[in-house]
Image 1 (spheres, one colour):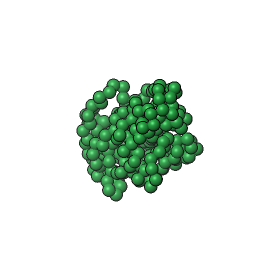
Image 2: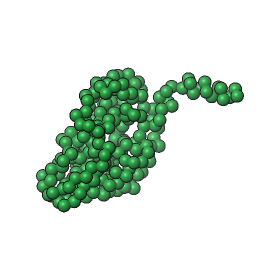
Image 3: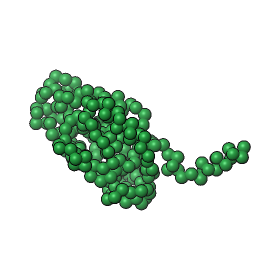
Image 4: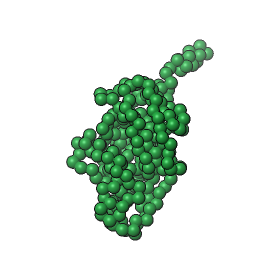
Length: 232
């Protein structure tokens, strides 16, 4: 009885952050509806999105639009995010389908064995993330913690959790139905984080049915440090 009581006291005294669930591994797919080789990667990410402990996000890019089909979900800021990873990871150029895992490693979207290894390694990595708390629809708080050199950036991402099917009418994928999951619709930098508790103002979503996630990561396409969602 004494041991049980002592253990309960230890749990009560332990910091809440230490008892919090481990943040999910962030898997970002950069893809395009006009990319002839992206269909299999889209399907794989759709399955990965259902896996516990993984947050899979689909970022449609616009630089293949000139091939004859303008991606219906692509935005320039999504391609900008990929370009930051390209520079950070010292790649020659952006490409699709590309998968970036927790901002620390990348692989071609069709090389699923490589992606799986990146996910396993990221899940096993030691983390001590700061608390992230959504106070209301217009405010999110990030707690204190160890900050990487150069600080960190706070990103608000909103994505559509519903399956999306798009009929492509021209280009290399003409006549095909493109299926995608967790398509990102908004990405916005809320500000910098310097390791101290900080509150950030959010704008309301302009589209219904979207889910929100806050990603704290090292600047300029750096490693993901923490992940927070309103229902987590």
